[in-house]
Structures are given as structure tokens and as C-alpha cells.
Amino acid sequence: MIAAVLAGGSGRRFGGDKLLFRISGKPLILHTIERLEKADSIDEIVIVASPENAEKLRPFGNVVVDELLVGPIGGLYTALSRGDAFVVAGDMPLLVPEFVDFIVELFYSEKKPVCVPRWGNGYLEPLHAAYSSEFRELLEEKIRAGQYSINRAIRESDACYIEIESLPVDWRESFFNVNTREDLERIRGTRERVL
Ligand SMILES: Nc1nc2c(ncn2[C@@H]2O[C@H](COP(=O)(O)OP(=O)(O)OP(=O)(O)O)[C@@H](O)[C@H]2O)c(=O)[nH]1
Ligand SMILES: [Mg+2]
Image 1: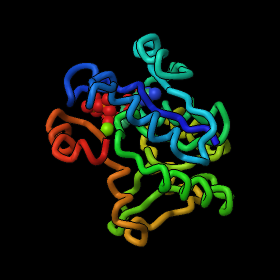
Image 2: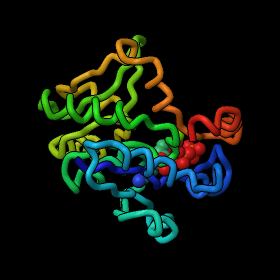
Image 3: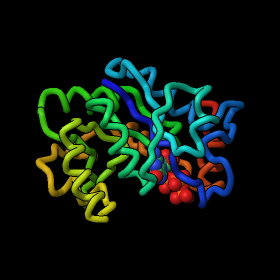
């Protein structure tokens, strides 16, 4: 399956070029990509970038340009033009390859439009989920209607939910994403172990 890495955000909370920010000497997005490469179920990686980010991200892999720029839902819509995809954000340096494989396998066996992790309180992890290219039609409707919530689109579909609390606790760090400079501090202490 293809993995699509969303990289069209502005990094407003981080301030500056978040995805190229170096952690342990390596750009943040490269940590994310290398984690995906370790997943057996992933055979190709595409970076879904904004026109503005496209050139600077080309050194890191195949870039597909998101012309919509309506937020992550537009990136997801663009990603699915390439077929079924496991979709993540570019700012997720602690992805757990085994967890990615688990979701992709479930996606293939369940044959649902989307397989998404869900917390006990109902909260979804839509940027750590496997999507069928058919889900794109629903996204198109939503985007046309000016509704930009991926969560809402998922809830209106025949989704397959993965209960996070029933999985290994170690896998939860897979959802970690860098939004602020303080988030960097959270990984710095354990950097040697996790990165
Ligand atoms: N392709 C694409 N990706 C997007 C778009 N908006 C956000 N993303 C990506 O979606 C992921 C999650 O977004 P956020 O964590 O909110 O990142 P961000 O937009 O860079 O950060 P903030 O500006 O602080 O919200 C990140 O990998 C972003 O690069 C978009 O319009 N198109
Ligand atoms: Mg984020």
C-alpha cells in the first residue's frame, strides 16, 4: 500500500519551517518517512505538499502537489488520487511500523472505506489511518459543501474502528506529533531511545 505523508501545513504553532526542522541532525519529515519505510505493508511513499512546500520537500521523496489547500482534508483527498493509502501527518517522528502494518492488514481484511484508530472517549486519529480510494467521493462532496472535518466524513461512512485501548500501550506514541517547540522537549529526553 502507498503511504501518504501530509506536508501542506503552515506550522503556525511551531513558528517556522516545522517539517525541515532538524531533530538528531535529521529533518522532522525524514524521521516520519523512515518510520514508514520500516513498515512491511508500505511499498511506496508520497509526500502531499502545498505548492509552496513542494520544491523544498522533493529531496525527501515523490511529491504530489495539493492544489486545494483547505487543510488536512484536502491533503487526504489529493493522496487518494493515487489509490488506497495509509495517511499520516509529516510531523509524526515516533510512528510505530508494527502498528502501521496492523492497520493496513485490518484494512485489507475488513474491506471498509476506512480503518481508523479510536480512543475510548470516541476521539479519532484520522491522520494515522488507512483509506480506500472510494472514500474520495465522500470527501469531494464534503469539500464542495465547505465541510472540512475529516472526522465527520469518517463518522458518516461505514468505517472500521480500531479500539486503541485494546492495543499494546507502547503503540500509542505512534500518534505523537510535533505541533509546538515544547513538543520537541517531550522527545528530547528520550531521544536516544526513540529516534
Ligand atoms: N497537503 C496538505 N497538508 C496539510 C494541509 N494543512 C495541514 N496539513 C498537514 O496536516 C498535518 C497536520 O496538521 P497540523 O499539525 O495542524 O500542522 P500545521 O498545519 O503545519 O500546523 P499549525 O499551522 O500549527 O496548525 C501536517 O502534516 C500538515 O503539514 C493542507 O492544506 N494540505
Ligand atoms: Mg500536528
